[in-house]
Image (cartoon, rainbow, N blue to C red; front, side, top):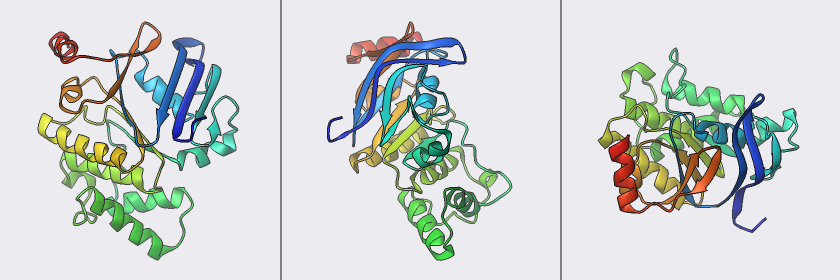
Length: 237
């Protein structure tokens, strides 16, 4: 594996139970790289992300993410892998019965943090990074959609992960708020973390040009989209 390489799949087959989703997948992502994954609904974007976080087992081939081999990872190692990953969901998955601070405290304790002072300091640090340092006392329903997604990004950063996997993180947001979230994710990658983001919002590809992969016909393809290609995608959506 190259020195800066943080994600690798070789001749990988990805599926759900016995249902084939993607085959012959070859992928390499470096530290600090931002990668879009596009494709129609059901084309395999989410299955790819779930395979990388070991929620779905790799059916065939080999895969390495951070320091873990996906084809041979043991169940007891999965929590250790996920400490090196930050996951950002479209539907937030925040606990609605507790404050922002308590949501983040719950996530830290679930990954082994015990010292109350360190937990408090880390929560303050990640909320400051997403410009929510003053809203830790709020309940999720008191926040806008964009603010809730900022909390989700803060939660993803808690354990200082090497990789951020984002599954349609702007899917429920208006364009202006989507751009704000994208700016945060791009800054995260510029600070040395790999960011892989599944999206069907092709306007983002135009506004934030970056390496783009496409799930199509059971394949993961390097798209190399021109501005004309992106305009065509937007028109056909």
